[in-house]
Amino acid sequence: MKIFLLVQLCLFVLLAKGQLIYKIPQRDFFPYRVLCYDSSLQRVETKRDVDFKMTIPAFQVSALITWKEYKQYLEEVKKDSAAAFYIAQLPDSTITTTESYQQLISSSSFDDYPVPGISWLAALNYCKWRTLKENKSDSILFYYRLPKPSEWLCAYEYLQGSCKAHDFSKLFSDWTMGTYFDGMYGFKNDFPLDFIYLPVANQLNSKRKIVLGNSFLFQSPQLQYYLGLYFYDKGYRQTGFRLVTVPVHSDTATEKNLFNYWQLSAVQ
Image 1 (tube, one colour):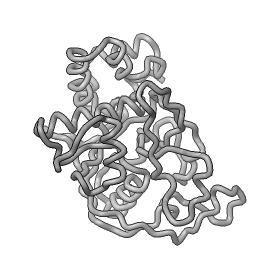
Image 2 (cartoon, rainbow, N blue to C red; image 1 turned 180 degrees about the horizontal axis):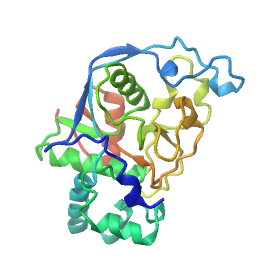
Image 3 (tube, rainbow, N blue to C red; image 1 turned 30 degrees about the vertical axis):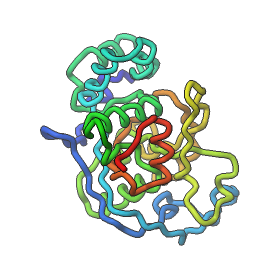
Image 4 (cartoon, rainbow, N blue to C red; image 1 turned 30 degrees about the horizontal axis):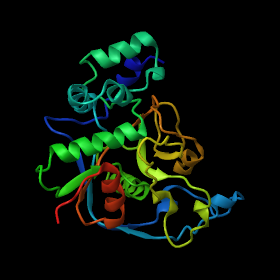
């Protein structure tokens, strides 16, 4: 299906002059229940304790990043970076026909719709750019990143339960920070889907990433279905991304990992 027909369906995106932000209060929740894991299933990796509970501190998560927002990033990258890097930040050209792709990247008609086809690393690069753009040059007080799977599930459950309008698990799935790794389901005392792997500079990122949520391409009543799909570091036509706002020093392990990867320093 042509991309311009797909984006016309995305009327659920609620944008005003600024970006739509969802404020999620601190809450206890059961992530495997939100995923609809069934402890009676025979597959070893799905035999999880449905009573596993997490406490998620209050946080803010954005609506899906729009073309208008992402094009601002592309404009600055094009001016300040090598051509190869700029090309790598563009949506994957295989998500639609050549004609529709040219219309997508050159027209302003889709500015208020989610940007599709962005790779995981390009989404993370956008997070770094927004972090630097919205902090003082000599100190970083907060930063942006993709949501962890636990945060995505927590926000989804809260927004569904509160009957508030939202764009989770509708026409676009979401990149998360989560990465699959061998033996991840052997961990009993934490939530292994939150594991984050960041590749060494210039190293091919071959690890499978965790994508969550229904889209125009896949629909399932159980979110656990998406954990069986394979998403590598490339752009997909049905996958967008959103940002979590994180104060520095509030998530020290993730912050250290991410800031080392970005070669940044937070405020002391």
